[in-house]
Amino acid sequence: GQQLNQSPQSMFIQEGEDVSMNCTSSSIFNTWLWYKQEPGEGPVLLIALYKAGELTSNGRLTAQFGITRKDSFLNISASIPSDVGIYFCAGQLEETSGSRLTFGEGTQLTVNP
Amino acid sequence: EADIYQTPRYLVIGTGKKITLECSQTMGHDKMYWYQQDPGMELHLIHYSYGVNSTEKGDLSSESTVSRIRTEHFPLTLESARPSHTSQYLCASSEYFTGDYGYTFGSGTRLTVV
Image (cartoon, rainbow over the protein chains, first blue to last red):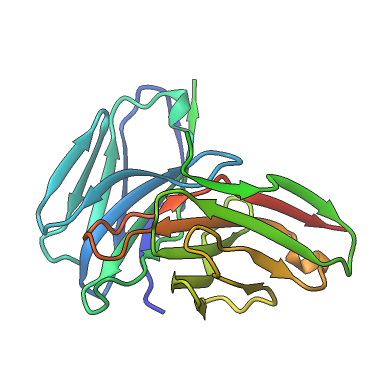
Protein backbone atom coordinates (compact mmCIF):
# COMPACT_ATOMS: atom_id res chain seq x y z
CA GLY A 1 0.00 0.00 0.00
CA GLN A 2 0.90 3.64 0.01
CA GLN A 3 3.57 4.69 2.49
CA LEU A 4 4.04 7.73 4.65
CA ASN A 5 7.63 8.50 5.55
CA GLN A 6 7.70 9.85 9.08
CA SER A 7 10.82 11.36 10.61
CA PRO A 8 12.61 11.32 12.84
CA GLN A 9 12.09 7.77 14.05
CA SER A 10 12.99 8.79 17.61
CA MET A 11 13.90 11.93 19.55
CA PHE A 12 15.57 12.42 22.92
CA ILE A 13 15.18 15.99 24.19
CA GLN A 14 15.41 18.04 27.36
CA GLU A 15 12.34 19.44 29.03
CA GLY A 16 11.57 22.90 27.67
CA GLU A 17 12.92 22.26 24.19
CA ASP A 18 10.79 22.56 21.07
CA VAL A 19 10.12 19.49 18.94
CA SER A 20 9.44 19.13 15.23
CA MET A 21 8.48 16.03 13.28
CA ASN A 22 7.11 15.53 9.79
CA CYS A 23 5.56 13.15 7.33
CA THR A 24 6.07 13.07 3.58
CA SER A 25 4.70 11.03 0.73
CA SER A 26 4.89 10.81 -3.04
CA SER A 27 1.08 10.73 -3.12
CA ILE A 28 -1.48 13.48 -2.60
CA PHE A 29 -3.56 13.41 0.58
CA ASN A 30 -6.81 15.25 1.28
CA THR A 31 -6.69 14.77 5.05
CA TRP A 32 -3.83 14.76 7.54
CA LEU A 33 -4.14 13.67 11.14
CA TRP A 34 -1.71 13.53 14.06
CA TYR A 35 -2.07 11.00 16.88
CA LYS A 36 -0.24 10.43 20.16
CA GLN A 37 0.06 7.02 21.77
CA GLU A 38 1.10 6.68 25.40
CA PRO A 39 2.51 3.41 26.73
CA GLY A 40 -0.15 0.73 27.11
CA GLU A 41 -2.86 2.80 25.45
CA GLY A 42 -4.36 3.29 22.00
CA PRO A 43 -3.52 6.35 19.86
CA VAL A 44 -5.46 9.51 20.60
CA LEU A 45 -6.23 12.14 17.96
CA LEU A 46 -4.36 15.42 18.53
CA ILE A 47 -5.00 17.50 15.44
CA ALA A 48 -6.91 17.05 12.17
CA LEU A 49 -6.16 19.02 8.99
CA TYR A 50 -8.48 19.11 6.01
CA LYS A 51 -7.20 21.85 3.67
CA ALA A 52 -3.87 22.44 1.96
CA GLY A 53 -1.93 25.15 3.77
CA GLU A 54 -4.08 24.84 6.91
CA LEU A 55 -2.23 25.62 10.13
CA THR A 56 -3.93 24.43 13.32
CA SER A 57 -2.93 24.67 16.96
CA ASN A 58 -3.98 22.67 20.00
CA GLY A 59 -2.32 24.14 23.06
CA ARG A 60 1.45 23.75 22.65
CA LEU A 61 0.94 21.68 19.50
CA THR A 62 0.88 23.14 16.00
CA ALA A 63 0.42 21.19 12.79
CA GLN A 64 0.32 22.20 9.14
CA PHE A 65 -1.08 20.61 6.00
CA GLY A 66 1.55 21.12 3.31
CA ILE A 67 0.74 23.23 0.26
CA THR A 68 1.68 20.37 -2.07
CA ARG A 69 -0.71 18.10 -0.08
CA LYS A 70 2.12 15.55 0.13
CA ASP A 71 3.42 16.45 3.57
CA SER A 72 2.57 17.62 7.07
CA PHE A 73 4.52 18.65 10.15
CA LEU A 74 3.83 18.70 13.88
CA ASN A 75 5.58 21.05 16.29
CA ILE A 76 5.51 20.83 20.07
CA SER A 77 6.69 23.91 21.92
CA ALA A 78 8.25 23.96 25.41
CA SER A 79 8.12 20.19 25.86
CA ILE A 80 7.21 18.65 29.23
CA PRO A 81 7.72 15.09 30.54
CA SER A 82 4.10 14.12 29.82
CA ASP A 83 4.73 14.70 26.10
CA VAL A 84 6.50 11.33 26.08
CA GLY A 85 4.94 8.85 23.69
CA ILE A 86 4.77 7.78 20.07
CA TYR A 87 3.43 10.32 17.60
CA PHE A 88 1.82 9.02 14.42
CA CYS A 89 0.85 10.95 11.33
CA ALA A 90 -2.00 9.58 9.25
CA GLY A 91 -3.45 10.62 5.94
CA GLN A 92 -6.31 9.86 3.65
CA LEU A 93 -5.32 9.46 0.03
CA GLU A 94 -7.05 11.74 -2.48
CA GLU A 95 -8.08 8.92 -4.77
CA THR A 96 -9.70 6.86 -2.04
CA SER A 97 -12.29 9.19 -0.58
CA GLY A 98 -14.28 7.74 2.28
CA SER A 99 -11.65 5.07 2.73
CA ARG A 100 -9.17 4.09 5.33
CA LEU A 101 -6.21 6.04 6.67
CA THR A 102 -2.56 5.38 5.93
CA PHE A 103 -0.34 5.65 9.03
CA GLY A 104 3.28 6.72 9.31
CA GLU A 105 5.82 4.60 11.17
CA GLY A 106 5.73 6.78 14.26
CA THR A 107 8.14 9.09 16.10
CA GLN A 108 9.13 7.94 19.59
CA LEU A 109 9.59 11.03 21.79
CA THR A 110 11.51 10.92 25.07
CA VAL A 111 11.65 14.04 27.26
CA ASN A 112 14.28 14.19 29.98
CA PRO A 113 13.32 16.30 33.02
CA GLU B 1 -14.30 8.16 29.08
CA ALA B 2 -13.85 5.77 26.15
CA ASP B 3 -16.51 5.22 23.54
CA ILE B 4 -14.77 2.16 22.19
CA TYR B 5 -14.04 -0.72 24.51
CA GLN B 6 -11.65 -3.61 24.22
CA THR B 7 -11.56 -6.65 26.46
CA PRO B 8 -9.52 -8.12 27.90
CA ARG B 9 -6.76 -5.53 28.40
CA TYR B 10 -4.18 -8.25 29.02
CA LEU B 11 -4.27 -11.94 28.16
CA VAL B 12 -1.70 -14.69 28.67
CA ILE B 13 -2.64 -18.03 27.13
CA GLY B 14 -1.06 -21.29 26.11
CA THR B 15 -0.20 -22.35 22.58
CA GLY B 16 -3.08 -23.93 20.67
CA LYS B 17 -5.87 -22.21 22.58
CA LYS B 18 -8.74 -20.50 20.79
CA ILE B 19 -9.25 -16.89 21.82
CA THR B 20 -11.61 -14.04 20.96
CA LEU B 21 -10.68 -10.41 21.48
CA GLU B 22 -13.72 -8.23 22.00
CA CYS B 23 -14.28 -4.73 20.61
CA SER B 24 -17.43 -2.67 21.03
CA GLN B 25 -18.21 0.95 20.23
CA THR B 26 -21.15 3.09 21.27
CA MET B 27 -20.79 5.82 18.64
CA GLY B 28 -22.77 4.13 15.87
CA HIS B 29 -19.74 4.20 13.59
CA ASP B 30 -20.02 2.25 10.36
CA LYS B 31 -16.34 1.46 9.93
CA MET B 32 -14.25 -0.60 12.30
CA TYR B 33 -10.65 -1.77 12.16
CA TRP B 34 -8.19 -4.12 13.83
CA TYR B 35 -4.50 -3.20 14.01
CA GLN B 36 -1.58 -5.28 15.24
CA GLN B 37 1.28 -3.41 16.89
CA ASP B 38 4.53 -4.66 18.37
CA PRO B 39 5.90 -2.48 21.24
CA GLY B 40 6.98 0.93 20.01
CA MET B 41 6.39 -0.02 16.43
CA GLU B 42 4.11 1.02 13.62
CA LEU B 43 0.48 0.02 13.25
CA HIS B 44 -0.36 -2.82 10.87
CA LEU B 45 -3.95 -3.11 9.61
CA ILE B 46 -5.10 -6.74 9.76
CA HIS B 47 -8.89 -6.48 9.28
CA TYR B 48 -11.53 -3.86 8.60
CA SER B 49 -15.27 -3.60 8.13
CA TYR B 50 -17.43 -0.99 6.41
CA GLY B 51 -20.64 -2.17 8.07
CA VAL B 52 -22.70 -5.14 9.15
CA ASN B 53 -21.81 -8.34 7.28
CA SER B 54 -18.84 -6.60 5.64
CA THR B 55 -15.30 -7.72 6.49
CA GLU B 56 -12.04 -7.33 4.58
CA LYS B 57 -8.45 -8.38 5.14
CA GLY B 58 -5.99 -5.60 5.77
CA ASP B 59 -2.45 -4.93 4.62
CA LEU B 60 -0.77 -7.41 6.96
CA SER B 61 -1.59 -11.08 6.55
CA SER B 62 -3.07 -12.50 9.72
CA GLU B 63 -4.27 -15.92 10.79
CA SER B 64 -7.08 -14.29 12.73
CA THR B 65 -10.69 -13.92 11.60
CA VAL B 66 -13.33 -11.29 12.31
CA SER B 67 -17.10 -10.96 12.15
CA ARG B 68 -19.51 -8.00 12.05
CA ILE B 69 -23.00 -9.16 12.94
CA ARG B 70 -23.91 -5.96 14.79
CA THR B 71 -22.79 -2.41 14.07
CA GLU B 72 -21.32 -1.92 17.51
CA HIS B 73 -19.43 -5.20 17.80
CA PHE B 74 -16.31 -6.37 15.90
CA PRO B 75 -14.67 -9.37 17.57
CA LEU B 76 -11.36 -10.89 16.44
CA THR B 77 -10.75 -14.63 16.81
CA LEU B 78 -7.61 -16.75 16.76
CA GLU B 79 -8.51 -20.41 16.33
CA SER B 80 -5.15 -21.72 17.53
CA ALA B 81 -2.85 -19.23 19.20
CA ARG B 82 0.91 -19.41 18.68
CA PRO B 83 3.82 -17.49 20.25
CA SER B 84 4.16 -15.52 16.98
CA HIS B 85 0.74 -14.02 17.73
CA THR B 86 2.14 -12.27 20.80
CA SER B 87 1.48 -8.58 20.20
CA GLN B 88 -0.80 -5.67 21.02
CA TYR B 89 -4.11 -5.62 19.16
CA LEU B 90 -5.86 -2.27 18.72
CA CYS B 91 -9.45 -1.79 17.61
CA ALA B 92 -10.65 1.47 16.04
CA SER B 93 -13.79 2.91 14.51
CA SER B 94 -14.72 5.85 12.29
CA GLU B 95 -17.61 7.56 10.58
CA TYR B 96 -18.09 7.10 6.88
CA PHE B 97 -20.21 9.90 5.48
CA THR B 98 -19.65 12.93 7.68
CA GLY B 99 -16.23 13.89 6.34
CA ASP B 100 -14.59 13.32 9.69
CA TYR B 101 -12.07 10.64 8.92
CA GLY B 102 -10.40 10.50 12.32
CA TYR B 103 -10.27 7.11 13.96
CA THR B 104 -11.19 6.52 17.60
CA PHE B 105 -9.00 3.81 19.10
CA GLY B 106 -9.61 1.46 21.99
CA SER B 107 -7.00 0.96 24.71
CA GLY B 108 -5.84 -2.30 23.15
CA THR B 109 -5.43 -5.92 24.18
CA ARG B 110 -1.91 -7.05 24.97
CA LEU B 111 -1.74 -10.74 24.07
CA THR B 112 1.03 -13.07 25.19
CA VAL B 113 1.07 -16.65 23.93
CA VAL B 114 3.35 -18.97 25.88
